[in-house]
Length: 253
Image 1: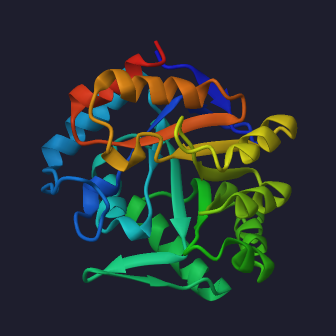
Image 2 (image 1 turned 90 degrees about the horizontal axis):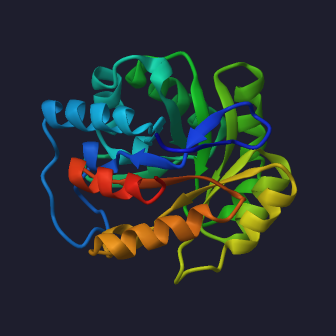
Image 3 (image 1 turned 120 degrees about the vertical axis):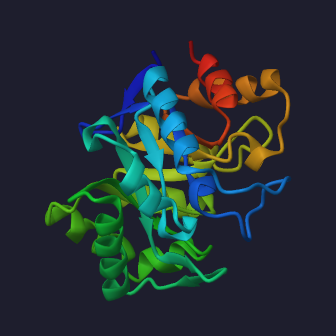
């Protein structure tokens, strides 16, 4: 079974590998090297079963992932098997992304996500930055997420950002930051250092360079590199292929 680490001081335990689900619901305007068809319900059910068998308990989704939330709500099975990462700020509808970082917009997004996922709480809710990390933090977006946490709608919160400065500012206020990190991109490594030193957590995105790594050996090398940093709690990797899921999990076993 995959190892687990605490998500800072939240009391949440997360598996070394998390399953990204953008490919469950969106195949337009994505930066993957190859086109793909959305999976059938049966394919998703089988992939989720394989993830559980491997010890994966993290599912990463977002309103920006098209139909992903709705399909997870219908197909993920027992809710308490999973630690769900979700996001607010970006929506994807009719082939276009739109952004709303107002308190009202973020609340509406969260309520919609709860309905689609058929749950009454989100484990980790992240601000889905459009690149203006510091501006969004300065305008009070993280305080809005903290209110959701106080209301019991979410268990923890943070930022999925695009800069080291944003990640550090986020970690000074919240539980977790989602950062880009792998052996050939270490620009945000100081956020992991900060998390390790302050009992906070980083979730890793794009560890496999958004699908641009094709050998199993190189993929496993990237995953092991990321997880050896004590500031890393979980590495989110998206796939529709059970074989690739097993190969990724094998990096930690």
